[in-house]
Image 1 (cartoon, rainbow, N blue to C red):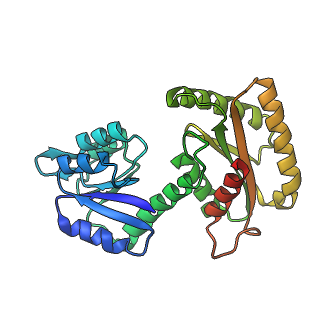
Image 2: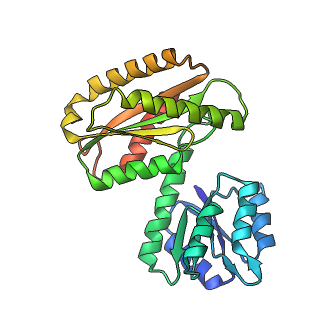
Image 3: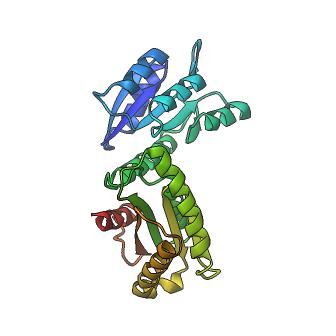
Length: 272
């Protein structure tokens, strides 16, 4: 279940969002002031995964509040829903850490689609075992969604770094970024021009391949296993492993299934 905090001085908006998401796997609480918001986010009683906030909070600064939320829990997803429609406010929202900026008045179907996207991403991240110090980055999820949307007949591989030692989070993030940068360069030099290898965030990567490779899945997995072995040996990488799997679209996904969830589950099984 995804924990959501709606921050808005207009209680009607909070009510509408609750109605919009009434069939989703979420638990929603509300706040109308900065102090109430900080108390909610800091509380250990209910875990907040997603904050939906209007930056227009009367005399209070909503952008400053987002920064304070980030200081308390950096991993929280922030979505701004506001009538403040200026380029300056949009840029400011992104700078303080908002992943989305949705304007009021909003169409309920549009807002539902936007919020479900973020809820699905959070649930996907939660499916990765705690062995990894940081879950799949939002941008990795975006890349896979983009691939599925723009060309359904594809081979998609999802890669996740995880660790066998108890390093500090800062050290892990710096190390992961260096590994991913090296891995991107190494893998790209071994792929064809038709293949696209994306590195996003601190511990995830996606490879997207054209549809004519759909019948080559087993050999592709074998090739990537060898590439990973050669890569970790060449760069003397220890205490960091890479779990990955591929999925063929649409062959391996039931139309009623979520392709992202299927792929994430396969990677999760590799981590067990």
